[in-house]
Length: 153
Image (tube, rainbow, N blue to C red; front, top):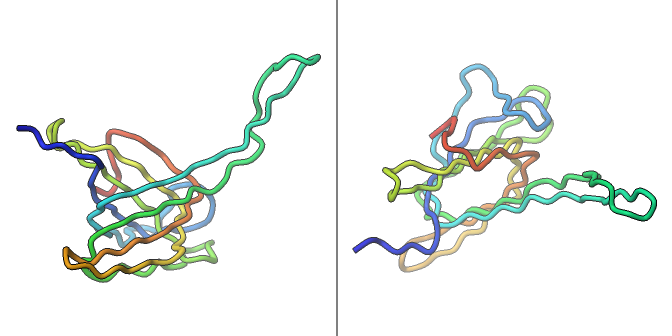
């Protein structure tokens, strides 16, 4: 019987970010690694779209604002999270993050999401009999995904 899943589990990887802006910029040979085995993950990406009218009729749309991406990750507490560092050109310690959602039904491939310029907004710890969990919130400048391949995992 096939396993029934209600959510995608996966892994969250990090690499130290360098510079500012929304590009995947790193220093030469940056430190990277596995951040967490993820139980659940949510992200919200939003933009403000304005409809431009031409003589009272909708003519086209224009993106007038792009909001930062809010990310929340819940994982089993398996050890220490690394501390983000300030790279060259950046004043706030940042990571680039990559989430791989596993797909065992398709030969263990995955769906990948890359989040650029992520700053930690703080962890939340919860002690439970089934295993301690940590929920971590990040804010990203940009994202890429869903894709069929990753950079880190």
